[in-house]
Image (cartoon, one colour):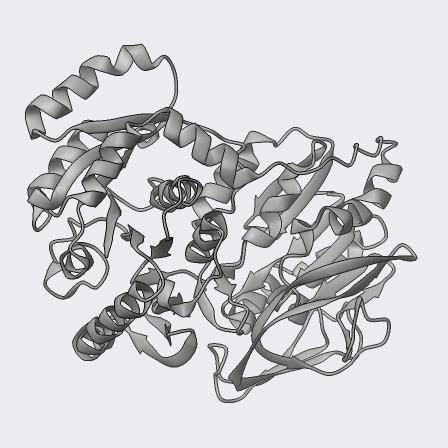
Amino acid sequence: MQGIMVQGTSSDVGKSMICTAFCRIMAEEGYRVAPFKSQNMSNNSYVTIWGEEIGRAQGVQAEAAGIVATVNMNPILLKPENDMKSQVVLFGKKLCAMDGMDYRQHFYEQGLKAIDQALLNLSQDFTHLVIEGAGSPAEVNLNDRELVNMAVAERADVPVILVADIERGGVFASIVGTLALMPHPERVKGLLINKFRGDLRLFEDGVAFWESYTGIPVLGVIPYLPEHGIEQEDSLGVRELAKTFSQRPIDIAVLKHPYLSNFTDIEALLKEPDVSVRWVELVKDIGQPDAVILPGTKSTIADLRYWKGQQLEEALKALREETWIVGLCGGFQMLGQQLSDPFGHDGLKVDVEQGLALVPGMKTYFTEEKFVQRRKGMARLEEVDVPVEGYEIHTGRCNSVFSPLIQYENGSEGYRKDRILGTHLHGLFDQQEFRHAFLEPLRKAKNLPEPTVSEEIDRYASWAQHVKQHINWQAVEELMEAKP
């Protein structure tokens, strides 16, 4: 197979976004292209149509390429359970939980075999790969047994483009230092500078320096584009985006759990011109918002205890007369009466933990088997039925409660009563009709006009056009066709 690999000088430099653009550009030009990331670490997973988990970024990249996402595009997914241990998802299914040392010592050979198998499988259907690295390839303490950067470039036999984020500062040192410390720097055939702000002409001397000092061509300088509308895999990106719109009239406070997951459930709210989102780490900072959202979590009881230690239950009960309270997945389970995890399937061994008691009678029991599937149904909001679809991914099983939020063909799920909403379904706010139905009473309370319902733009096409406009795409194509 032919292709290109995008590595970065650090995390959150924009590797996923660059790969997304490359997938769309190549698809539009007729390439049979697929994304690939050997090993991803994220609690923000994507559920395939077969009910398997992969990294969210590879699901998004597959959508950009116009193809169906499969487990071969991300054969290894690590989902952190705490600071020391992660759940290992292999080819879309939970394998085990391992700490970093065990993973390094005992999974390495199995990981290499999984990578080779995934590359072989993809070669049956595609001619080109857009491969994403992880973190930095200059982690000298890990490079002898790494599974995601130069080891993958070697196995796939593709050239590498190195991306740096100029917004962080220190971009000259980050590129030079990465090239000095990374293995096989000769595979790096191009440099990309991302998130540039200002007049590009003022950076011409910088480009000249890199090309002279490193001997590697700068393929482009990509201007910062805040409103691209594409889901961010790294929660840092979402928090930065939220800051941009902090002065809008509808105030939504989102609880930032210590083990936050599936934060992209929130990002779609920023598409609305009158909505601001605040990430809140302390109960005292919640204030008097129009809505409070408890998002998903990788360790429900641990995060619940974090908030209970700050008297979140009392704060929410004091707000519920004027404020909408929304629980999503683990956040929904927190709103119930009790949670039970005697075997530690969700992270902590706990026989009975009292919930926030805002959904009366609901009890959650955590099981070893993970519930992963896509679903479609009808949600009832303000006496209006709204079609919804999304995915569920959780180990907690909840007993049925009265007044469910969503009706499916084979049953019901969630909770809605007064100003309390809860569901396990991820992706609700991505759908404009549901988003507007949810925001309608908030807008009425503030005498805000209902925004015009417009056809949403093709966010992948506009982002790809932005990137292609500012890079030497012909040079990228030449790199893909040439062997390193």
